[in-house]
Image 1 (cartoon, rainbow, N blue to C red):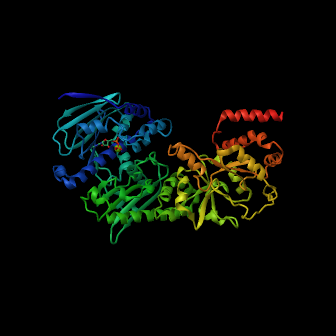
Image 2: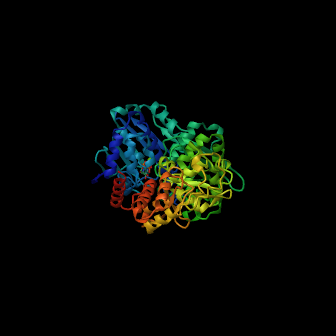
Image 3: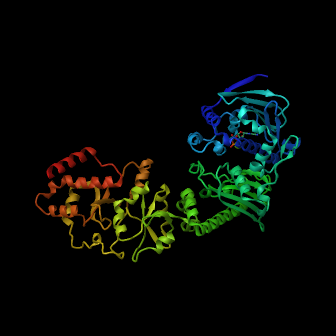
Amino acid sequence: MTEERHEFQAEVGRLLQIVANSLYSEQDIFLRELISNASDACERLRYAAITHPDLIAEDPELSIVISLDKKKRKLVIADNGIGMNHDDLVESLGTIARSGTMAFLDQLQDKTGVSQIGQFGVGFYSAFMVADQVEVMSRKAGDSKAWRWVSDGEGGYTIAGTEGQNRGTSVVLTLKKSATEFLEEDRLRSIIKTYSDHIALPIVLEGKEGGMVNTASALWTRPKKDIDSEQYTEFYRHVGHSFDDPWLTIHHHVEGKIEYTLLLFIPSTPPFDLFDPQRQHRIKLYVKRVFITDQCEELVPPYLRFLRGVVDSEDLSLNVSREMLQNNPLLTKIRAAIVKRVFRELTKRADKSPEEYSTFWGNFGAVLKEALYEGGEQSADILKLARFYSTASTEKLVSLEEYLDRAKEGQKAIYTASGDDLGKLRQSPQLEGFMARGIEVILFTDPIDDFWPARVGNYNEIPFQSVTHGIADLESVAKNSDDEKLESVDDVDLDTLIALLKLNLGDAVKDVRSSSRLTDSPVCLVADESQLDIHLERVLKQHKHIDNTAARILEINPRHPLIVALDKRAKLEGAATDLEDVAHLLLDQACILEGDPVTSPGDFARRLSSVISKCL
Ligand code: ADP
Ligand code: MG
């Protein structure tokens, strides 16, 4: 038969270079990946056979067989699963399917190493860590023709028809010198036992002491007391294509009107595609131990997509179709139960170990907050679980409950400030008046924080209020210091100065007014009640949702020596023209404090030079 030669996709070539240079100590993960693929292939066949029993009839006992030929240095991982035809081989073993994968792989190179490659959907290529040559023989269930795929991991591979392969796939590795340990039965047995014990199919090692190596029962069906944390971890890594430890494990069997088992995990590090626009979860749905799908949207809401694990239902019918999964009342119940249970466990953790909980919130809080924006019925629970940075503490995150406990007498709102960078945010001039009065301000740094407070409105009937939006009515809040910065300025009349600034600035500002927000800075910008908040507008502009930004309100600090001096000057003759440059410089300064560019750098430079020369 003729042999075709194919080149690897460029990304695969680069990936293989990373794999070839990988650390010696991580080599044994190749076996976990190949066994995981064999097990997936068997699960897919079992599912297909529900509707097409003839696919499995000739050889119904699914298993994975591992065999060795020491002399020829060959290690074979064989399954009798779904198999691959010619096009499947080209598609699956020559390209990288998921977009964005390569960018993350590049980071891997210098960071944590290849033990993570399973999570990117490229686990197969780990075979080239240990093998000079990889040969894949496969016959797809239902086909009569078999194929042989061969590669040395450099440049490309060949495909040709072949004889003698039964249904399923055999991966034949010719091991490198450095991988001789994998020709030892004992070594293989111990790896399989550690990594793959939970695989719900027999894994048979052919050899002197041959036989089944694993327990071959689905882990979630075993009693909790018989499962140790290492077994949970290995299962989590398998089911979630993960490399870290689970941060939280929920294993729960429900009997009653409906019967199902949950084995769910929350990762301890965020998965690489957490913010993929598809917002897909990866929970696997089983029915009576048969894998059905990992794309059942109804099973878990998008804001819990960081969960990993399995749901096994006793009540759904085995040949349930995609359509039947939509609006299925059983699934709706299971989904509600998952949400409830996850929230309950999170609340427990938050109470018991706040620090660990903060780590979780740092990883996944932004995802949970999507539910606030969507306005679902879970909002109340999520607001309780939410944690924030604030002006009151530099490291510890605070809850809204704590915030309100500390609120000042007369305080009418939960004050918030948004920014991209926590450090810069803490320096915002708009915070000065709040800090001086000891009023805590919550600091928002996730992009979603610009959106949900408007949707949610309030917490415990106290409204959220951005410090850069609308009027800050701080005079009504009790003062607890006799800080001179806060001395009453009722006697300062800035009317003349304000009129003059408005005259000079024209349309460049929406308004000019005296501020209770400021203590140290002379000026700041705020958005009018009727406008978008400043940070939100900036985000929308960055993403090209809006073209132009609106003119802002310029607030001036009645206690600042510069403003006091300007006010005096404003009352003298000829002030209107004399202060033109100064008016614009004040506005430019406020823009710079906001992190925004000045309207016209040329004018700014000219005015600054002119004002400085007058002083000299
Ligand atoms: P992943 O398993 O995450 O999809 P891999 O790189 O491990 O990524 O495998 C790529 C693809 O190759 C699989 O999705 C599957 O379609 C195919 N494949 C690999 N091994 C087998 C096998 N033993 N039987 C059938 N298909 C396989
Ligand atoms: Mg795989």
